[in-house]
Image (cartoon, rainbow over all chains, first blue to last red; front, side, top):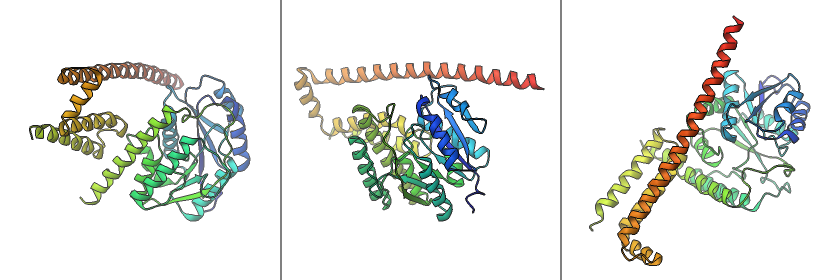
Length: 244
Length: 111
């Protein structure tokens, strides 16, 4: 499929990202031509909505009625993509960490390698990206879990920068219980379901403003325990099915 | 083994939870607390004296009282958490319905 012919939508969940969202939209318009942009405004209390409107009429936006969280905002975007029959969904963050030019690389890889999921990996080659301590431990732990459960090496399973193909979009949009943190557990599920997953090294910027949802000490620890649990459960779920 | 029935009950509950998740009747995040609960039950059933040890640590002379206190506390917290959740859901449903009604009204107006 030709890059220009594939119908692509960039899904950006945004919660109080007024400072960065404008630049993110502008850079996507410049770098990924022909792609539609959908911002899911998750009940922001700042000027995020205003900034999205400044992006011009070509930016589609959804205002969530409630604050639904990161994962549900993404699922909203994915459902929109499914409803409107897009070929590819590019998932990007609104905080300016993910670069549009790098996202374009993922999209190209998805098309040329016919992959179902393309992950933007910070650690596949050394890009000089430094993540917080707990994040690094988490990344290593989930890399290890995926390795032993699925015998596949994924260097950056916690990445939020992904390209999803049509089959995956349709699968995700129908998940009743879309996980709170759509990372490692979901990846294991997709690997076990034999979707083709490709990792592409990308550069990312260190975040400039705001706080990550994985800041602090308690929150990343609880995140890791829950994610670990969900990996094990997903594994049990599918191993059981294999023998049925 | 007098504790065999309790071990079996805990195992049955764990199996039930996992099978519920597999049939997609229960979400992974909600099952977390319940699985923890069952594991605690298993540990207590396999090592009943861990309760005595723990009671001694807290200076409680009658260990079964500790068990009851813990159970009541857990139930209390759970019921509070659920109440909070129900309240939150109620508000969300009300809000969603209102928004939906407004949308419908707009649609009717256009006709």
